[in-house]
Length: 252
Image 1: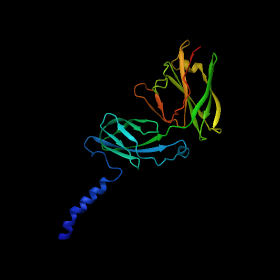
Image 2: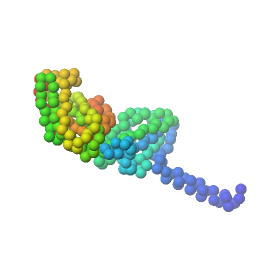
Image 3: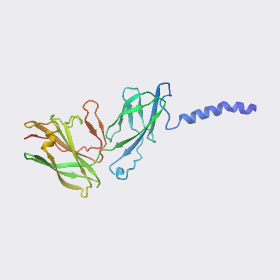
């Protein structure tokens, strides 16, 4: 081996180390005994891009917190993160970015010596809204009337949240029962609609005759949700910032 090669070898090793540390998928911590890893890919979506199941290029800036650990990291332009060296366990991971619905990845499993792959879809708040709302009540049905105002013609979900709590919707999971209507397609930006709820359905889901029931409606373009650990209720993504007012009635 030449003296010149021996002289250049340390420089070559340092160069490889620098290159490896500048990859976007750089682990947050070294792998150790009794640990595993998570690979997370964030997929940012809007109600327009989601029609074709495509991401936007807005991959950077998503704040990720792994509950119960010191991990708190922000995505780069790849939207990919490796969380390496996590003790074997199940973790709840919270994803946030301004303009997007918060999402919680529940019980992401870290297994010994393995890397679990989790795609996470982050949805921008919908521009759709609900207006001109009224309702009527019979002895057997609640009929909810509303205008659905949209900027994009596509599928939307209308969801009605019912509760015994007058602050239903604040927080999002304090409802007792929810029922939804899938709009197969919205052809008109101002779509006048109504939704019927059988009162027997409410009685089968925690409500009793003579009880005051509170409810409101909201719209979203995706049916994704996660489950609140305390209440066990679903929390839905992509809901609008323009829900209906809250209403109440005495259940016949």
